[in-house]
Amino acid sequence: MWERDAPEEMGDLTRCAHGGEDLLPSATDPLTPPIWQTAAYAYPDLDTLDAIYEGRERGFIYGRYGLPNHVQLERALADLEGAEAALATASGMSAISSLLFALLAPGDRVVASELVYRGTRNLLDLDLARFGVIVEYVDATDLAAVEASLQRPGQPPRLLYVDFLTNPTILVHDVPSLAELAHRHGALLVVDSTFATPYHGRPIQLGADLVVHSTTKFIAGHHDVSGGAVVGRSELVERARRQAIRMGGIGGPFDAWLALRGLRTLALRMGQSSRSALALASRLVEHPAVERVSYPGLPGHPQHDLARGLLANGFGSMLAFEVEGGRAAVARLVRALRLIRFAETLGGVTTTIVHPASTSHRSVEQAARAAHGIGEGLLRLSVGIETTEDLVEDLERGLASLA
Image (tube, rainbow, N blue to C red):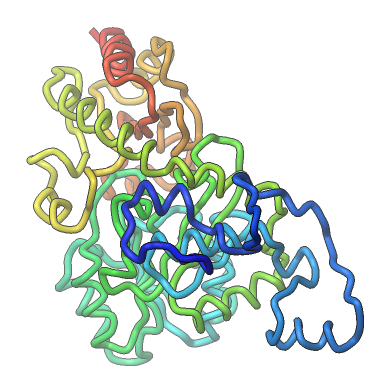
């Protein structure tokens, strides 16, 4: 990982704390990386310019092409995922759009999970479809249905696209089996691992070809960054990088610096929030006002056994639960909360709760939402690093308002 001597085998805490430190090694390295707040670089001569453009010398060109802070973040993410390369972008959707536009051409076919992140689905349906990309949605938790779609006569599939953990229903996709199916039929497997993070799951090591993250969420972890990432094989990541450069998808150095700063504590934050999420889910499943709870750590979750085999260090910080009484009950519950914030975000140090039917899936017809398990009483909880007992008390305060 580093140019200076470092052990090859390191724990997650160490990798998070030291990732990306090898950019400018010297006899006196700064403990905190600086922010390279510049839009462009000067060259001493034409030969140096040629060498940098041709990759014979290490150097930087222009902000839109990426700056040292981006490279540090990229190296840290690639190391955590066990991948060859990474690309840091301005947002999660910038990462996804750069990747898809780089890999797809008119007539290509994509098989995607019907529960794929709503922003990704809008991109596939409203933008890529206009350029002749064929998209077919499938229940990706049903491996037989996935294979039937992949082997459908006609245009061979180019991509299979799934979220490791679905938003907002928190189902688990069988990444190793999906990778085997995709590769058998000549497709690449792309996994959005925003919810799982490299702390809980590493899709590249499970057979995926590419991973995308919204680093806005758990990677940065403080509700103060916009960013995204593509991680995987160098050749594929570089294609996405060229697309991102052409589309203006590379962010500024400060957001990359903030994301790397947040990454330093990823393992600590995810460990705490995952433990709290399990405690909250265990309380919720016993509450009379709660109709159902979706959290992979619960034995009653439909993919609990799968999650035990695929996820490490716990089951993640995201859970969903449905209360009796629909939207009216949701309104009472969120109004009664004092610590948990009602906000359209996730993955930060503070716990947030959101009503998907009013936010991410607002434009989806009610019948279609219901078919995917997104009812009017469904709430998605992103658990932060607060003391577990405080979160339990606050959530029970909200639930008491439904009595």
